[in-house]
Length: 339
Image (cartoon, rainbow, N blue to C red; front, side, top):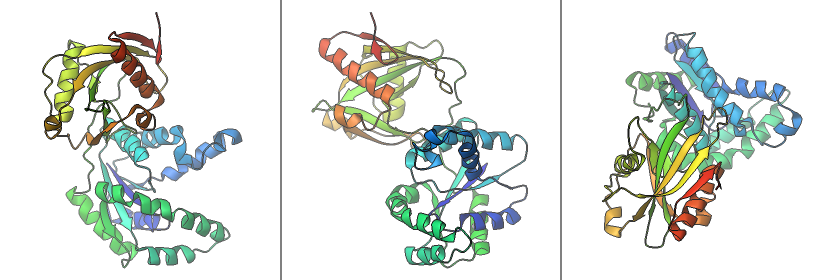
């Protein structure tokens, strides 16, 4: 298990984590910041100049998960990870990766009223105190903007008037009950190329329905991996029922087949998109999401989807829309047509 202590920079996460070690037998401090420090030593200056923060490196997010799994193979746990995560897509990628490895996460938000938080930041001393103070204060607007999703996702502990020991005692009490556990779908990472079926569903303005997974970054099409021995079109119908609570009246027509090449850590495989047709307004009221897998859904225009989908998924969407217009399925490789 991992106990993830989130919060603004300067909220006292590391101090509370050290106190928590005394209250949870067998616990170990796991600082994902050390992963970033290692990357800063190994990556080129040119690559580091391309990002504002080590968290923006895909390698950091992967290594945080892999390192936690490796540590838990050596020690009993839990791991206590004091680390600020303000981008929800990074939370999804890391927590989803941990869930895929069967590692539960208890997510806590240590919240401090801004006036007191600024006082704590201003009180920082040391040779690099001024630089740290300026950096922490500059990140406060980002923390404020993230509060809506943070408070919805994490168990919030108001620490403004608590000592680090009192904070740790509150954390230990909740951790024992498991009330802060993130309910995330636990899908093991594939070891071989996969066959996946997605469905495009449209509204009366021809916008496409996208869903927001809890276990990986970005938006997706309704759909999933085809099970062994299952026809792909039937898998598409099953996934729509499981993810949206909607029953398609008939098996949908194929729009595209796209071969995704392996790009470690992704194993690649065949990606199919089907035409699920138009959803009438009365059917939209029937949408029911599985909370441990999807947090939301919305319709998006093609140009809006460009900023919501990964480049590969957006390329599939573009060609699927062209196929729908032409009334014929298209064969793609790596997001581009062939044949």
